Image 1 (tube, rainbow, N blue to C red):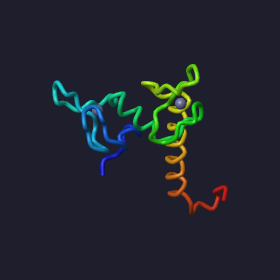
Image 2 (cartoon, helix red, strand yellow):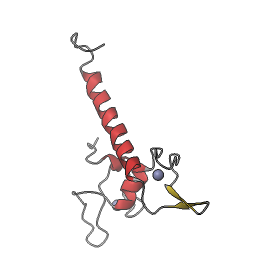
Image 3 (cartoon, helix red, strand yellow):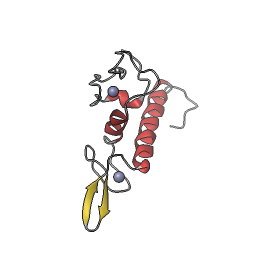
Length: 108
Ligand SMILES: [Zn+2]
Ligand SMILES: [Zn+2]
């Protein structure tokens, strides 16, 4: 199984149609992008986490409250991106913790 190089590889890219765990490809050259993913994919991944700022639920875009209307934003709130990254980091730390769970010096 390929190692996830970017957490957003967990979701499909709506832009270049890269499958989950596959790198995004450049549609013009057909080459995989090793330096990052399309923004649409990053946003889609961040959207798997609820937004602490506008309280968007997972799968829903961030919204701005303008003159009584909730207007969908083209990007996610930075606080939501941080929340998604923190959740991913916590998950990752948990994985490492499981590997050393038998250590008697552990906190538990
Ligand atoms: Zn892509
Ligand atoms: Zn938001």
